[in-house]
Image 1 (tube, rainbow, N blue to C red):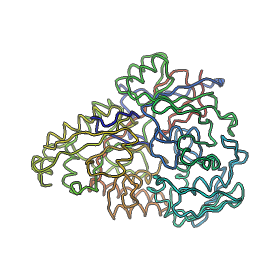
Image 2: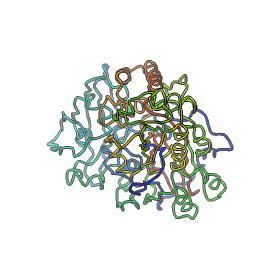
Image 3: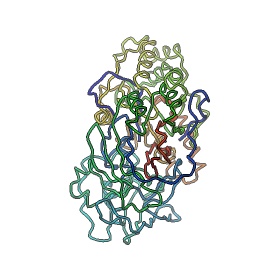
Image 4: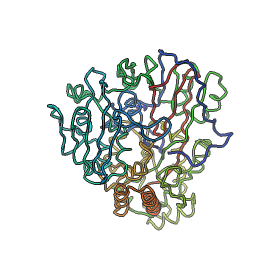
Length: 552
């Protein structure tokens, strides 16, 4: 993620760590998904160089929220449960099985034996208690052995807080070396799915306790690759874990290098030249060239994502519903998707993707209507923009799955707002600073661009985690609505999926009525790669999983 200091840049921004698009792209607008390669003898060894748009913020999954951090963690660390290839269906991870009590309040995990962390220490129940328990505000934990005196948190574990986990988990106990019991305070329907997310990865307690502050730059897990080196804003190098427990699935590569190449077009040129093996987020204009290059292939998957523009609800100005609606109707989202996404996305109507269960297809979405926007602006108290101060549009400085070319999108948005009399300027920071400052909801921020790639295939992971500001101050969209908050709580307490779906459909209608954010687009994710790359599969969570990848 590019570091440029404060820059004039784009406004359409999305966050990353989600489901699929409602319809496939037009045949002439996007490449077909690359079929799985025919069975061939796996070749071991080699270095895969992956070009990405920005650097990681940190590598401790309990404290990060961005996709560029998680794509490293996904190869170094593992959780109790895992998501299957190309889906969010669950399968055993570091736990071989789990049992749920009849009242849905006790979860018992049976752990995999014979697994070791990269530092040679044993994976066991105490490591699980340490890894998850360290995020608890009031640590009600029990170790089998002596355990550890877990250090005080230096900063809030954002996922844990935004998901209300302190109000959900009562205790975590190791009943023996390979059994961990979670006691819940209340029913949490998506609990098992949540335990496969990055924030729930299991780390080496020994490595962490050696230097808790340094762990964020030197993580130690059980995964197929070991951390080797990090040259900030340049590259991260991972080496194969030769003692990996799941040898039947890899790793086959000897080394994985993730290079930071901020400009989409430069990454593509590096790929064509053979200097990198794969890349993320190509510019739409480069896709046709990749299709015609016999040395390259295009791997695609509908994105489980949402890109949106949010309002600073902590600022009095944006508590004005008519003003929010004026902005919503002023921006021509279809033109943005048509001209900039070039068929690789669709206009978003709701805060979750259209093929996710619980999607409300009856929500009409905000029409592009300049006259209506002007009328709403006048009703808000600012006819033709008179009396309205210049607003700031905060823009993410990095490409994400749901934003192919942020600068072009930002220019389009500024132009649209100007048509109804709203003067705006665009502001951005380096990625780490952007995330930190946006979380603080400063008064110099009016609109902010964020987005999301889902973590677990559950609507709660979009609607509650992104938009329920009453859940906690860690929720980046600080929208406070009691009715919405009650729906999110009810959704977590309801086990029946059909009943949960109805709750979430009502929540989406409420969001449309209140306009806490402006949904922009869901995109199709494309990863150009050398034809040497075998067995790489895109994942709905945008996880970059290299465990079973090999080079021809």
